[in-house]
Length: 259
Ligand code: ADP
Ligand code: MG
Image (tube, rainbow, N blue to C red; front, side, top):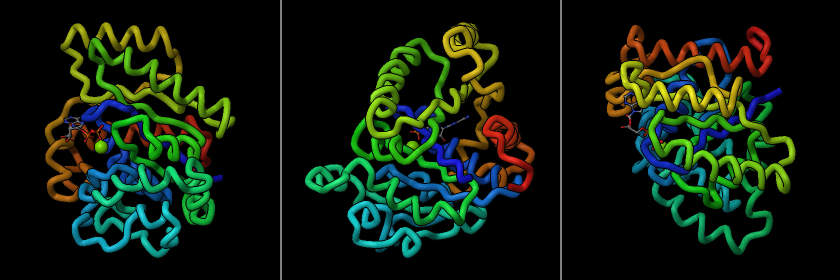
């Protein structure tokens, strides 16, 4: 069965896109067929996958509005080995234009239904907001991966997100669950980070991934080359951490070897 995972956190700059791109590339490395859906008008996942968002005539925007089929828009990341449903700033308009449409919350889900057979995992990179695009991701997904920095206000933002997931679960997507919380940009020497990390484990227990993503400059450099860290600097701590995350994700989701 295809696993559909929304990577979400309404805060910006918390590592959603970095996680989406690097988890996608790592899952490919482990033999999985992966589709990455860029659902952020900033198009960072698109650029970070080596595809120029400015050169696209069709993106996920046309797919959501019913003006194109998913398979017509999908491209393959040249060095990542995964497929990409790209986005650019045009997607910012979707929020408004979808409001008047029928089934506006299930548009992405309906689109992914016809694509799912081709992939083992579909990752959705969400925008930094709890808006209609994010709701589309939460309705389409089976589970949510929440990247977060272990900072003082991190837990506060988390309760809004957990409430939104609860609402979606009570209404449009009863099957949704939290796949896990991922600690990113982690500095083990930082006492506050250690404390927040402990708090997180007390609150969420096994929902916190064992894998921790360290702060690593290679992860920040790779997107400007249109690469995942695995292709940019395979041996870097960041690339290796995301590879371990992919292994942990596969083990947790009960996906069999090569399945
Ligand atoms: P979001 O998608 O949540 O807005 P990004 O993934 O774009 O967040 O990350 C925000 C910034 O932090 C980017 O410049 C990115 O390169 C950098 N970054 C993300 N994760 C790491 C990390 N583990 N180490 C160093 N820099 C990181
Ligand atoms: Mg992003």
